[in-house]
Image 1 (cartoon, helix red, strand yellow):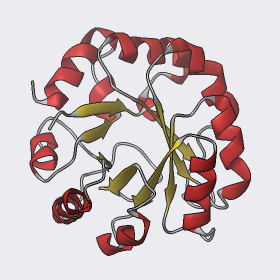
Image 2 (image 1 turned 30 degrees about the vertical axis):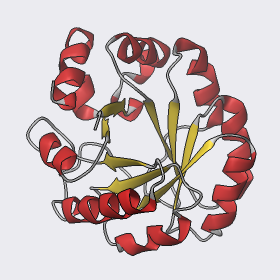
Image 3 (image 1 turned 90 degrees about the vertical axis):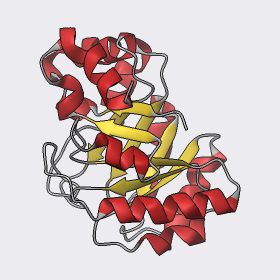
Length: 218
């Protein structure tokens, strides 16, 4: 199973965001991970579709956009128009998750489902026929730099088994607190997409390529 690295630009230098997107692209990233937070669904505010649009031309990589917002429906089209390639919504929002997924797919964009640490993995079963990605949160969403929650590994194992049995090509992404010490355990548990913000951007631009390769396990 090939491992993809999706650096979270939440941990980048915001004063040079376009350059940072370009740097991680050149350094060998597979996706650009965009954490969108609204100060309501999660206790932080980050960026919106205008920011995504402003840096879209700095990379030809897929933009992996993680919406930690509630409501979701009114903003999906804006993020599509901004250039998102994968849009992930949370099961825990008050919006109808299935409707959100169907709306994302209606624009020809890949749809993902994210589940928080306290959410049982089985909720993903009802969406398996439509989604393209599942994000297992290994921290409580809201802030970067948090410590990895080990129970996420069991969740990864269970979802990987479910994906394999489904026969569908669904990516399994781990998001939160992933570093050089624990990344291999997430890969062994079934993750094939690794979100890493702090670890990717650690040490400055000269280190990005090496950090990405270390995370990939090569």
